Length: 473
Ligand code: AMP
Image 1: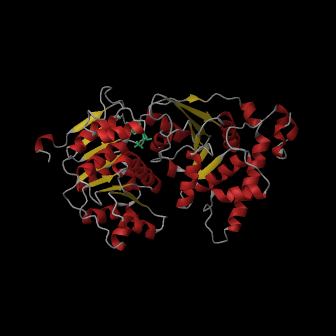
Image 2 (image 1 turned 90 degrees about the vertical axis):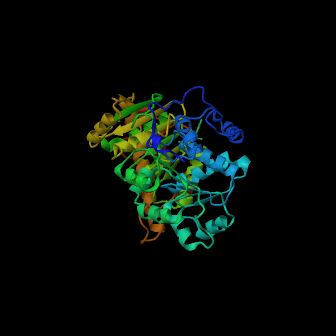
Image 3 (image 1 turned 45 degrees about the horizontal axis):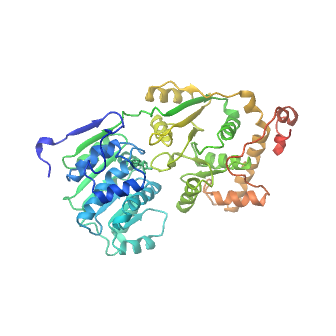
């Protein structure tokens, strides 16, 4: 137990590089788990791990100010696994996450780290059958990872499920948990777990709400902070592209084409825009897959899987995917829409240039976004460079993009009609698009193949009737 002397002790690391001589063993991780880290290719502990794991192993509560990509999952998972090795017990730990995708990824990482020690996990998220989850709970898992709403559902409705013996509570991405209004559910959970427990709270930002939550559920915590606030890493090349709004899709297509050998995440503001852009890209032969909040949970997971497995190289996403998702090898982030909230820019571009790799981010700025864009530059304290391109080469794509847009609108209309009048716009999925593409006799080429464009296609095709003939030589 902590003494009053070191109450509110803060460990701050201003850059995110850990001391070079630390190893997992030297920060207190046991040999078995250090070996599991090595198997995952983790050579040395990250800064957040170096700063927080020794504290957690001393049974201290920890607040970690760190973002996705910092290795924060390992920072709470390793002490949990180590404590389980010392005294195994069912329902030992509960990890609350704001999104289903993040919960699933946390569980995957715990299972990967704990494979050798036989850890059992249960993932309790919405959009998945409660009965199947209840069966999993019946097997008395050690670690539960879930979104607050579904955890409360099970606490209230699943016989035999109780958190009365809980040893560790983790609140991951606490700022987001609170922004998503999970306060009531968190309160309910706090009322049924023991006060004698260890708590870890992670958050990208320290908001007033997070501070309040901290006071409510942490005891004498050590605060650990890595990396300067809202900084972006140096290995990330950041560019902007100033474009006329009416030609946005042409510019996006140009980027898809130029970067066709890379993995791309493209951020768009709305679900419908995400859907439409994915259809346009696919009508043009790119391997694109959408992910947004109006897709059902299995479809979201399937979309992410297609991207992770390399079956598709372009993920078109709303901000649902901008935080928390563990997509290890993204080469490029394209902001098709400038994020409304500047902090989201940092989260979005944080999908690339991870773990020391280089990355590229391109933000498309139209005449309507200048103010929002300037706010971002002020926040990150950087002037971005213009992305180099030839405007003329972009406009060569005009006819084909125009045709692809027309078809995409028709496809969306057909999807909506097929789903019935009452269907909410946007509640559509990738499989529908697959079926439609094949019904229309369109083949997808997948990523990697470049569109062929020549000057002729612009000069001969006119504006609007060029169709897929733009590749004629
Ligand atoms: P997180 O911040 O927990 O979402 O982790 C981001 C990524 O970093 C994941 O792909 C982890 O597998 C990876 N990672 C976590 N810790 C380490 C480490 N010590 N060394 C290398 N990669 C790590």
